[in-house]
Structures are given as structure tokens and as C-alpha cells.
Length: 228
Image 1 (cartoon, helix red, strand yellow):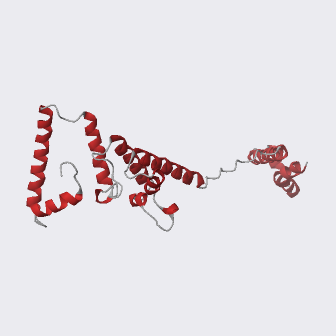
Image 2: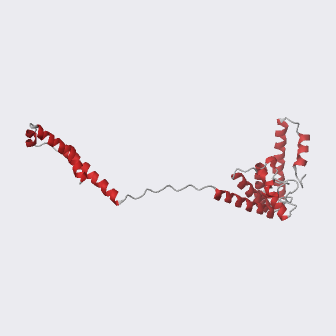
């Protein structure tokens, strides 16, 4: 068990030590295991056998894989890594796992084996076959990682790109000139409406014809100038 820890070994041992459905014995077991593990590290360090710091990084990456993969099984029994797993294999596998999860894909797809159509098999299975590997090696994981990046890059490029919004067309000179003339006519009409009436005009309003002419000048004067 110390040389080749697997679920097949640890599961029966746990079942024999901790009754099913009993939380107190489980807590006690975890406490003692953690305590002995810390003492083991201290004992190894005291005799100069402690693993280097990079080994701690490897253990952290292994823990990530165990947490990320279903049932903590990040490789099948038919294609295990070397034991203990090499750092470059674990690092590449962690990168592939994070990329696959980031794209919202199921990790089970990577090891999927399709006996009817090899092209539909997972990237890791395909890489194992291409490399004719009997173990999970760095070359296998690197090949699967490279193909995963190419797959997601192609999918991103295949997505329809947003169409640019049409820019407003510049106003034509004739249309701009007509608009300016209409603005001038409207401004003159307002000025005439607001202009005060002189005394001579007021006295002439006794004549109905003078009143009518004055109103026509106010209402129709602008239109006459607009037609010019």
C-alpha cells in the first residue's frame, strides 16, 4: 500500500476499520491519519530523506486532479502513469483538465473510447493509440493538450462575428443648402411675428383692408420668400 496506493487497496481497509454510517470513527481516523502524516514528514526531514520543495508542488497538483476528476480517477486502470507520477506528466494533465473544464466540457469525454468509430474517441485515448503507449506519459498528455487547444480555437473562429453598425452617410450639399434656407425662412417669420406694431400701422388698422394685408404679410411672406 505504501508503494502503490490505489482505491482497490484503501477502500477495503477503510470498510474494515470504519463502520458504515458512523461519523465519529471516521473523524477519529482522519485525525490520526493527518497526525501520523505530519509526524512522518518530520521524521523524514530529520534523517535527511524529506522530499524537495518541488515535490510539494507535485502533491498540490495531484490533489487538484483528484478533486477535479469524478471519483478522483484522472487516468484509467489500463493506462496508469508511472508510480509515483512524474511531475511533467501531472503538470500537463492539470493544464489539460483546467482548459477542458473552462470550456464547460465533461472530463469523461477525454477518456471516452468508441470502438465503432475511433474518430469519436476522447483526445487522451486517441493520443495513447497514436503514441502506442502503455502508460500515461508526457508525450501522450502533451499531444492531447495541443489538440484540445486547436479544437477550441477552431470553435471560437467558427462562431459568427458581430456585424459592424452602418455609419450615417454625410449630408449632401444640396440637401444641406435647402435645410439652411428653410431655417432662414423660419427665423424671419418668427422675427416678423415678434416685431412691435408702429403707430402708423396701428392707426391704419381701422381699414379692414390694411388689417388683411398685414396678416397676409405675416402668414404668407415667409412662403413667398421660400419659393424664390
